[in-house]
Structure formats: C-alpha cells, structure tokens
Amino acid sequence: MSKKTFTEKEIKELSINPFVKAVSAKGITYTDEFKRLFIAENVFGN
Image (cartoon, rainbow, N blue to C red; front, top):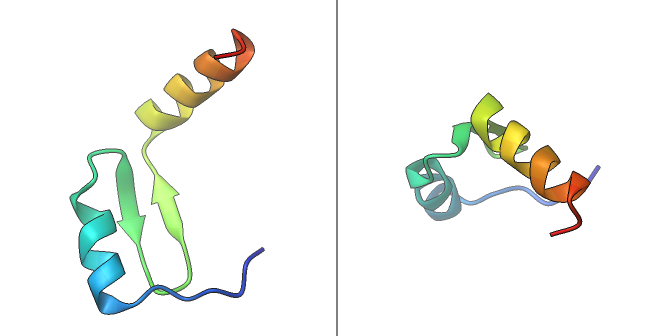
C-alpha cells in the first residue's frame, strides 16, 4: 500500500472520473464496471 495521500485538487479531479466510485485522501474505490473491464482486458492480454 502506498503512503501517498491525495490533495484536495487531486481528489476533485479523480472524483470526476466515471470509473471512480469514491475517493479520499488515502485511497480510491473503483466501480464494479471498471473492475470487470480491467479483468477482461487483463485476461486477453491487452
């Protein structure tokens, strides 16, 4: 786990992303849709 914390500006920028479910100074939670897309791309080696 990274020890980096996000600034307020970074939090605002990240929260605009449609694949971000939640963001705090300590971490990002991605949507289930993003997780499915990521796994599908990873399985096919893209």
